[in-house]
Amino acid sequence: MKVVLGVSGGIAAYKACELLRLFTESGHEVRVVPTRDALRFVGEPTWAALSGNPVTTEVWENVHEVPHVRIGQNADLVIVAPATADVLAKAAQGLTGDLLTTTLLTARCPVVFAPAMHTEMWDHPATRANVATLRERGALVIDPASGRLTGADTGPGRLPDPEEIFEVCRRVLRGAPRDLAGRRVVISAGGTREAIDPVRFIGNRSSGLQGYALARTAVARGAEVTLIAANVTLPDPAGVALVRVESTEQLREAVLSASEDADAVVMAAAVADFRPVTRATSKIKKTSDDPEAIRLTKNPDILAELGVRRTRAGNGATPAVIVGFAAETEDVLANGQAKLARKGCDLLVVNQVGERLAFGTPDNAATILVAGGEPVEVPRGPKEDLADALWSLVAPRLAG
Ligand code: CTP
Image 1 (cartoon, rainbow, N blue to C red):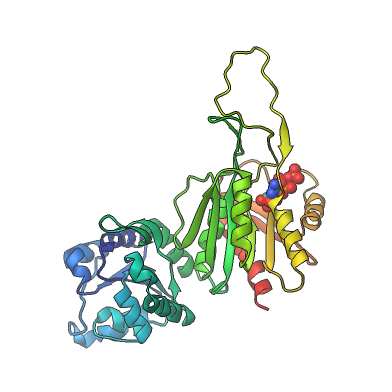
Image 2: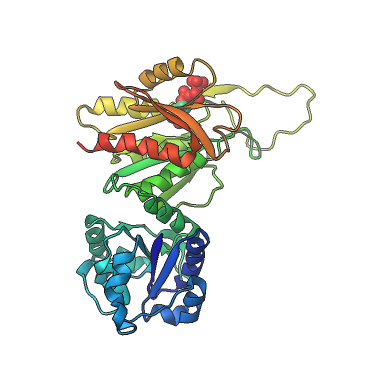
């Protein structure tokens, strides 16, 4: 496909070289359109060599090809990374003056901005308003990551990793609908750990792959995503607010607090059903031949609590959609239906646990049970496909 990579003048311009490679290596034809300031960070020969295409910032070169119109018209995707406060402001105002801004005005394909700037600039009411305008018009603006910025500063404003920006763009190029725009979703991922002593825990095999796939897909569909990750070692998805937790109690607090003003909550995390009654404050030694049994107590059921809280709050209470996951090995549908009713959720993704399915694998197969509706079968395929199938059931339930 034809991709325009707009690069504006921020220090993160060097990361756009990696993004460019990801596009070209996956077979896309890329035109790089930098701003004049971007060339102060990374020069024209780098962009030309990596893209295999001519590179200019101006509308006055090769005028017979009418580049200020054609590049935008012919694109399947325009991604601006990094997008500075200046380019966001110009795009929001519809200003032109160079090849990138004219391209943004002529493009009729999906447009994605990956802003990067200092926290003060990102938080400034002018930038907030520009971002809101661009989103209202249908552009996808990926929230920057939090972390180290230029110099000694840290905070929101970092360009997400190029691989993760690419993941968003890949989904947009696949035709991800923008049906979650303006929606707040909360996703839990991974598996909780219950401490036995300072070095040991009771845990499970959940890798977080399915929850992370749900988060990446929701971002590409326009949602504002809070991802609550229990012991996940995967790369941070672009555009999400990431909260890291370990235990079920921490997960519960994070989920309940993030869910207060959420439109949808998806509990993809594998939550420990039990935890040790006591946690030894120092490492348990192997001095005794007859060690003490570890006594367990039941953990709170977060999913059920979300349902109860919503019922108590009455008509129109949020989250409008609550989604649970269940791993079943036998009587899959009957057990799933009973669980859906017991936990008071709207959708329940019933995984068939088996060879090369579910835990730690890239593929999944599932039946999505629908409260008051027919089940939806999702055939074996990448976890991304299950994520898409699930959001396609969630989005219309939020539309009302
Ligand atoms: N869940 C939760 N809080 C718990 C346990 C589970 O929120 N303490 C959520 C999970 O995130 C998941 C769903 O509930 O969405 C799974 O329910 P669970 O009853 O634990 O299902 P299974 O693991 O299939 O357990 P079992 O069949 O043993 O009841």
